Image 1 (cartoon, one colour):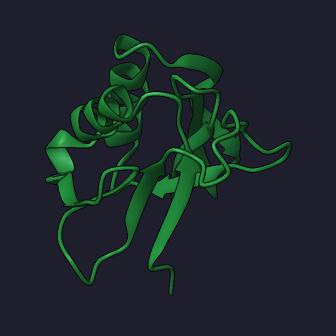
Image 2: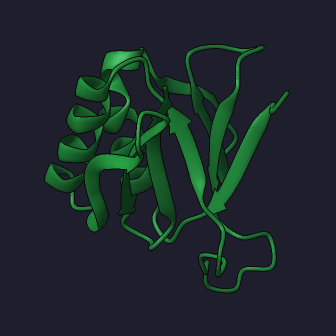
Length: 123
């Protein structure tokens, strides 16, 4: 249902490297690079994350209450994504753990520009 989600960043090269490195094991790469915006994913026709320099040339700001959630297959994958994000310079917003007993396991970080990310699994 989602084609792509866009977040504003302050440094395109740094953002592309962060997200490609973070999702390297999932096969992520820059699929389209159009200068001020780049689409990162596994290929055209799949959901992607776009990183961009804001069109209005103002500073990028993360939205209050905005979060991008990335599904995982296992709790171990969530743990690995969380740890990799921290290694890459993200900050902790809630370490990996069971949030709703037997229904939701997740971890939360903020990327290098303060955008909030969640890695999760239902069940």
